[in-house]
Length: 268
Ligand code: GLP
Image (cartoon, rainbow, N blue to C red; front, side, top):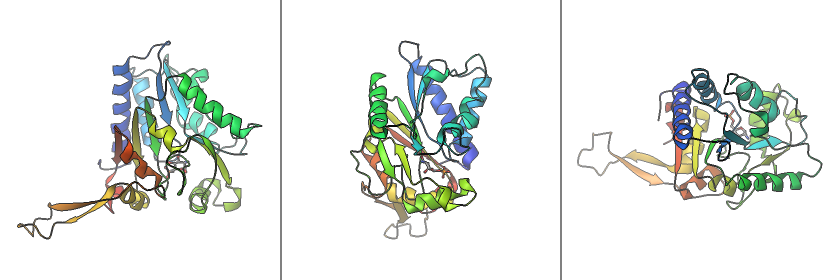
């Protein structure tokens, strides 16, 4: 738990920086990094760009795989995840360590054969020996990538119809015009995320508080404690793994880290 989104971003960026540097990626064995979109990872991207500019981090031998992309939105649309990634991250890391575009992988939501596109994506990930670290964000309904409530925990990269809540939440990026939000997306599956050697999730803001508590659990003051007045004694009520809150699948992962700000802990 960190104070605010900026502190969360800088914690995660330093964490990723250390992982990449300890890994010592080479052209033969690159560091494979999964990346999200949305407003939550923006402070992390800003902090990573700073580290690159300071010469503390290089993306030269990093291969990236984005989590998801809208179906049918032109690639150069301002709200396509392709445009987002270059605007918020890849185009900023200009330095001798700039990431070569050939090492950036983003699902093509305009592919002629969407199923083949999804299958090829999974194959490409496997071809690199899997994802080393998947950075993710979540929706208000607890979705990770676009794994909407009800997604199979065994799901792989596929076409997904967006939940109405997600369409409503994302309308803010489309001038609040619900009809402009795409109805479908391509997304890595829950199992694709779980296959990564490590998963780091950023959760900030009070509107994510319910989802966080559904994925982890809640705590209440321990009224049975001898020190009744001691509000620092809490009983944790664990939540189970639940495909209606797909973030909860991280409980099945041996090495998962959720970094949150104070606001997101409101329901814990
Ligand atoms: C979309 C993306 C998710 C992202 C979520 C949260 O639904 N598909 O991957 O986690 O938005 O966005 P924000 O961080 O803006 O709340």
